[in-house]
Length: 117
Length: 107
Image 1 (cartoon, each protein chain N blue to C red):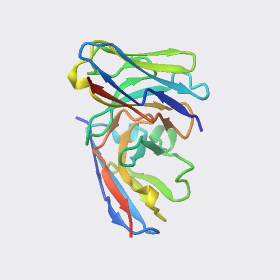
Image 2: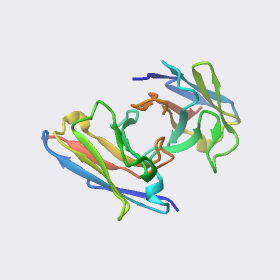
Image 3: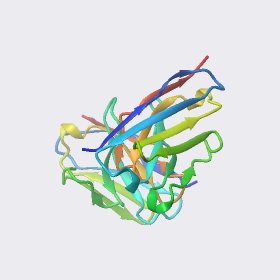
Image 4: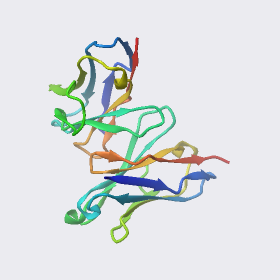
């Protein structure tokens, strides 16, 4: 059974940083692209970026809206996906999901990030 | 960025009715489109991929189609479990972009 479990969300002040984790199980992690997507309360999801699989060199793509502030990485020995978020703003407040695939075929349950003073 | 214009934004439908949601792409996306269903307080679930392919386990009353730059999700014979919000996603070109969503409620 595919499982994706996000963690690391919480309340952070504007300008602060946060690192989200996504523990993956139930599939061969290195075979898959992995994505981060966020969804502000009551709004549509926003694609943040993707990290490719082993066959494609684990390269990354980002949404320009977060490029330079957010970094996606993966630990392929522990099957964990990461999202490092820096210089956070109030508009970054959202539920953050990790997902399997370049186009997300399976989503985690999400972790809430609130940016507020 | 490719804009995905989704319509309608919300609709009330009766049990057993047929219902169609449409996303119009601002550029050619060549069938690189997925449909997702989201229930309250839950993460989105993939329903259709590559415009017309039904994800495993999704009921056959769901179908996807394309006409030019318009991509549609149709639900035949609506059931109560089909309520929720539906989003399209284009994955032809980075950054991938979602439609604004369609809220489907029972009449």
